[in-house]
Each structure stands twice: as C-alpha cells, then as structure tokens.
Image 1 (cartoon, rainbow, N blue to C red):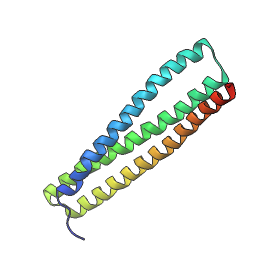
Image 2 (image 1 turned 60 degrees about the horizontal axis):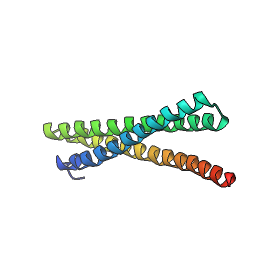
Image 3 (image 1 turned 30 degrees about the vertical axis):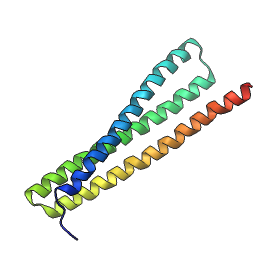
Length: 132
C-alpha cells in the first residue's frame, strides 16, 4: 500500500463539512416543524398529530446520530492528518480507515432517515386523497 499524504484525508474535509451543513439544516427544519406541530397538538390533540410528533422524534434522533458520526469522522480525519504530519503512517492509515467507516455509517443513517421522511410524506398525501 502506498503511504498516505496530507492531501488524502484533506479531500474529505470539504465533503464532510458539506454533509454536516446539510444535516444541520435538516435538524433546524425539524425544530421548526416540531415547534409548530406541538402548538397545534396542544390546541387540538389528535391521533394524527401524535403520530406525526412520534415520527419527527424518531427522525430527530436519527439526525442527531448522523451528526455525531459525521463529527467523529471529521475529527478522525484531523487526527489522521496530524499522524501523517508527525510521521506515524500506520496510525494514520487506521485513523483514515475509521474515519471512512464513520462516514459510511453517517450516510447509511441518512438513507434510513430519508426513507422514514418519505413514509411520513406519503401519509400526508394519502390524507389529501382521502379528503377529496
């Protein structure tokens, strides 16, 4: 195997940063929806709003976990860069591998959250069709 250079983990910095920005935007959007849904549920509690709140809670926790794995991936990329800089090549390879694995987990959770989001939107579409 070739040695890692400083540019190898550095390539992931921008990608992980963009992913984290998308995750943060998703998190903020959930916060807004949850606040308005909570107000609606307090004024007029229904089974529908309770179900939506539970769905959002699940998605929120998945998003939090996605963010944690993304941040850990970025952290290990930085540690990998440090190890390359000080000449600890084997440790750098392990850190880079772990960073990639954490990024894969984060992305897999993103797919899971996306599937849950689609189901929630399908539920809304079904309600619209049934109201016709």
